[in-house]
Length: 143
Image (cartoon, rainbow, N blue to C red; front, side, top):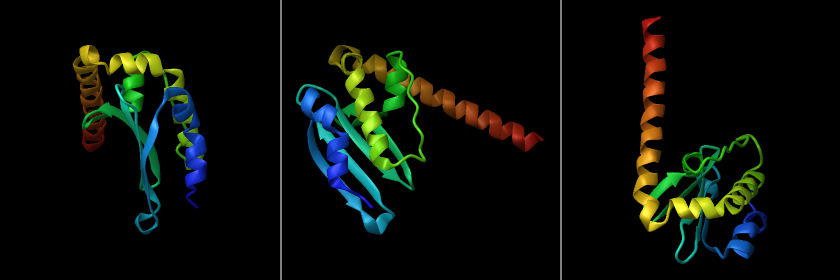
């Protein structure tokens, strides 16, 4: 069962210590419990948490350019993993704490003077994942 109170508690690091505001919590029972949670902060990057088909993930970005948090963390030199089978609220708390801990480097990577370079690195990582996936798929086809 979805709990806004649990979500708000899970986001407390970002709200209390980093000055983010929860802009939206949109939960849809009729769409299998999917949700979108958006956080904003003036003069910084925005954050959104999503759940679709039982998978939870986080994107950060500016304007309408969203990037997977894991990709941007890789760009700044951080490793990040979590268990998709864990409770959604624990996942949000873990992600929120990770953003809080790496905030300075994430913010720097998404500042105006670094933003294009960060997008370019993230796009390259996405292209590499597609190549790896298609390479594995093609090898299975040959077998």
